[in-house]
Image 1 (cartoon, one colour):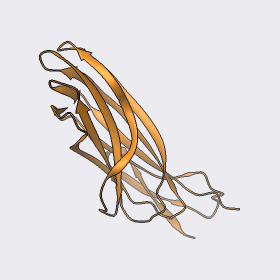
Image 2 (cartoon, rainbow, N blue to C red):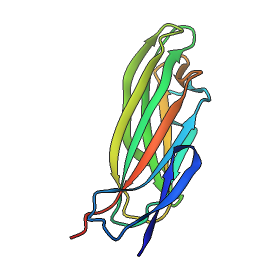
Image 3 (cartoon, helix red, strand yellow):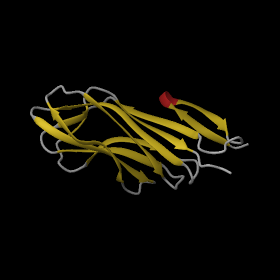
Image 4 (cartoon, rainbow, N blue to C red):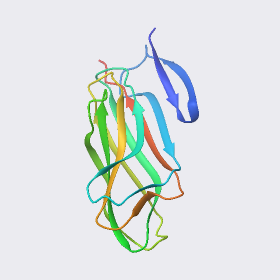
Length: 162
């Protein structure tokens, strides 16, 4: 019987037997979170350093990527923010995967809106896949995560087997 590694939030690990899988089931879940402030003054999409990683167990697996939490605020003045998840496989360089904040206006120092988004990513690999948050603003300083918690959850979805 083959086994699939199961990673669950807060470092709990275990194994699941795969002999009964018909596919479309969760093979592993990896959660990465930060409470650090994430901000930018860049008017071009810029890497934030908030990275989450998963290594799929099969090339036919897909990865369901969720991002949630944070607290959008800005420094003095008003700014509009865009936020994206970029992905890279095996250290090969990042490319845009999906946008989860679209030109959101932050007008006030304590606006405090949370964010969320998701994408089903076809990875075609058993190499490590990294997901990083990229952000930009039109002016000023805008925080994606200001004294809050931002979480990226990755779920490996096993391929359908007939």
